[in-house]
Image (cartoon, rainbow, N blue to C red):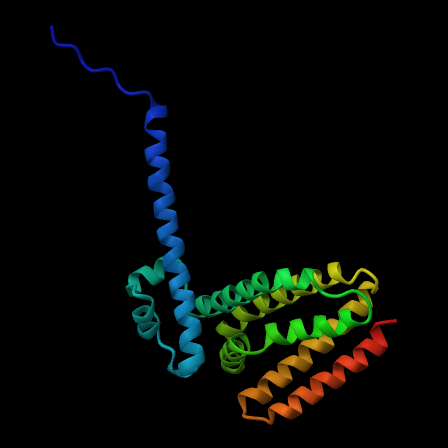
Length: 214
């Protein structure tokens, strides 16, 4: 009499299916990261007007159909790219933030940290998007909540590191520094004198240390 082989217990199939699921999730994450990185590259190298979905997909090595699985629109992709870059920079700077010196030098070191974070690639990419967002309501609505959320997260990090300052004064120091560094970053993009930027940043650190480092 022929007997039917017993069905393997479900637990014996679980590891294989779990591995397959993790591999699929990893592939999705890699595709998403590739699209975000390619978006930042295009914004910095080409500017927003010349950044097309075709160019982004070509640089990321994915099809336009794959893009549509990850992002609802070009505006959604742009906002996610800025968030992706900022989060990566924050993670890179987190160890440095924890090692800020104690005493009056702490405020000057924190300002340097913010300048490093809000200048360079991030400043260039964000500037391209904010200029475009002025006349693009869809892009503006996508960028604004991301910008606010990232500002809050950075402020929370610095507030935790500067426990001696009341929250209201910490917010004042933070927003003054962010707006100054954004202005200096714009000056850098427009080819301003780097020595002047260094002097202005040094003067702000001196003033901030005197005013907030009590």
